[in-house]
Length: 151
Image 1 (tube, rainbow, N blue to C red):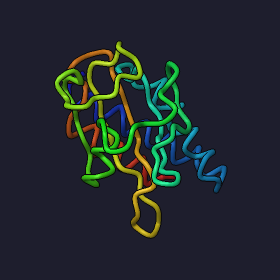
Image 2 (image 1 turned 135 degrees about the vertical axis):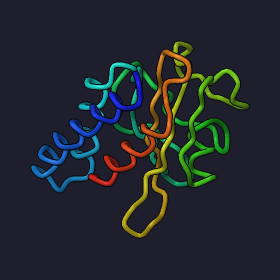
Image 3 (image 1 turned 90 degrees about the vertical axis):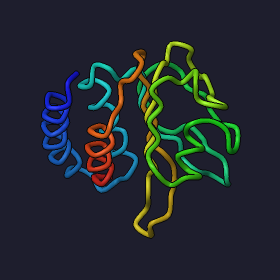
Image 4 (image 1 turned 180 degrees about the horizontal axis):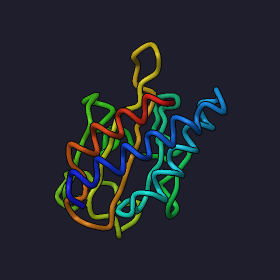
């Protein structure tokens, strides 16, 4: 999808999500709604979900797509890279990422964004996988970051 079309789709989704999340102050309800809408509206999203930090472990939380890894080995893989670097990680080809954790071998590219609480502490990550190589770019980072602020 070209960048202009992608940005336009994200912006329409953002407007929809603004209205939907107004209906609840519950963080989990908002997270569930966000990933459900994104999963069904972004055709290149094969898997999308949250891994949350719990007692210094990354545990799968709400998600859409095939069955996920329940717990990610500490300091290994793309999600932990997002936690440890405190920045978005785009992986054009997961097979070339050192220590990549393959929860589903059909995933070919990945995007991870840290999730922050109001105290500016990382509490987890949003993880997005695609069946295609090179699916994610700066548009995904910018628009998903804005969407995460709706939580």
